[in-house]
Length: 600
Ligand code: PEP
Ligand code: MG
Image (cartoon, rainbow, N blue to C red; front, side):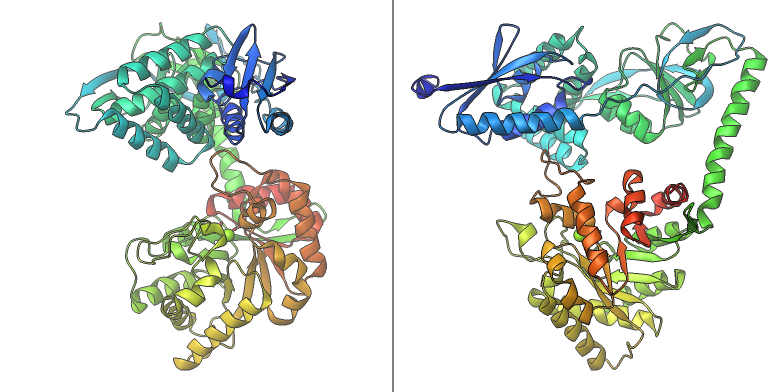
């Protein structure tokens, strides 16, 4: 019946060739399917005499498409031609952006004892006794239906908020529509991962197991891992992505996996956690044997001589000295090779992160995200004032942003109306209209805490000059009402809304400074929600740099950047070329950002 619907439509088809060395794997497939679903026409993919529904993530993945494979995409229906064009354009971008993860180069080594050759995942050296992966299925009382367990698993994956887990969410979403019981889901995931055996995408099988395990956990069938309470090297066949999260909380020194690949999600997570790891078959090494894992040279030594241990220890020491050296330079100014000094400030959210920023070498606070100071219950005026005071005391230069609630940021004690498009609704500076009492209390607390210190206040999400004027007038009124002298306080705006780009000359007349929020500016330039699970924008797009260049060219007041772009190694040189003199980054990125600046 369904295919009859398309009977009288002309078929459109095109050949798609996989050019990424990673193949057509879970994350790009998830994005492709998301777009395919927006069209009403029938969309099918044919490869090796097998034709599947290209709106179904699971069936499309089952083709196991690798580099240089070509498949035919067939579209039939009302919007078939457009669908084919758009999907082809997206596919090209996905292939281009899906950069090959380079195998880490191996260094030569001078060990004496027998080595197991390995492929490096995350560089470093570790020495510790071996521990073999051990997992037990623990069954507890189940109170949830299969449907509720799936919903819980989907919600959990959503909150983990990384592309890996969002892709798993899309996969579970699709699988659960076809499988209404745990048995069917088990069968489907086993079947799908079986099909990946022997293909280049074999390492992605762990995503299927991870999804199944997550649903089972909510049905009372939980796989519990046990780890030693002293330092150890973990040896396993493979690990699920979610198990890497658990592992990072233990005393693990290194990991040796037999059946993963450097491209697997497990490998990506091991690298982001900085766990020394490599791929080798070390499963025969007895429990408790002290081994050396050298993920510079790509070897595992299971009967190291004392001289080998000395060599490994000396490499561990020199690695840590290098890290410490970079870290000791964190309090020095960041000066480019051309002698230009760039100020590096911190983005903080509360007293703790402000203290960490101080420790990490921040030269001030470029963005205090005040909405995270009190996450649970509304603070009193005294509580707010005290928190600001504590932060202001730490630095000479502090920029506080007034509450930026709305869109992706919510607080349980600030009620906003339900909106169809919250990113385009009551957000940021617009709270002055809807929640004047909350804003008055916040400004009152900031003024009291400033106690004549020359702090800066900025308003988020400003889109017109009048909005700024109204917010500043409101602030002056609060100061007057409470008889506080705020002469030393500067007022500025975050540049996050594209309209500001065309109004800079008028803003120059009224503001004291600008801070570019590239996270939101990019979202609004490309009309792509920043938290969207599958749609992605190119944060390094020339469009973003043109916008920054134009702001700097036209602004007559100081301009800094406080979006994520400010700590992106690939952006720093360009930002400095655009004329940026101040960057504000997360506390943990300060030392690295300063080093990156020193290389420019
Ligand atoms: C931004 O939008 O770039 C920014 C720094 O603000 P936030 O991420 O808090 O919205
Ligand atoms: Mg923002």
